[in-house]
Length: 193
Image (cartoon, rainbow, N blue to C red):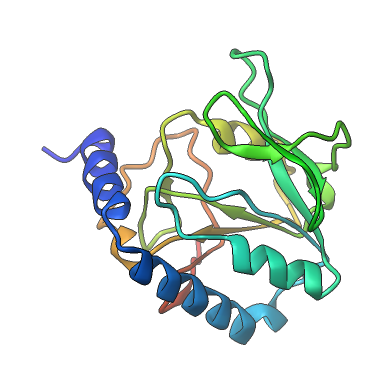
């Protein structure tokens, strides 16, 4: 039987085993594809993340946004282990980063953006499906945080992934927040209700 955990384990392992060359080609293709669709989105304030554990690299995407004059934000987790609400702090080219308890680099500043004012939140994933669902690492941080957005939100949610991370179903649960789109090295999928 297929479970979220089995999907997560299988895809995570595949992702971890990619060669540096495959990662580099995928990162370049992702940026190229974004450049071809970016005019469809308002992207003055964008939240990204520092890639870890084999996630498709966001480094070039972040550099491009900064070069284009966009404000970039990175997630910061609370030191309180019970608090699963992410805060988004400004990031610039030379911003100092510190590793959080999961080993993920995050800004060391105490400045926080209002989530409702961010135009796009780019989401990491282990798996995604054709209906806009995603499976993350299992902590629920993004789902908890994004549930605070208003129903009629202006913030677009875009998953970033490798093409092989697409699965038939992410077995969505009631608390899972759907994305608006997914960007991979070879396609931009828009999810309709």
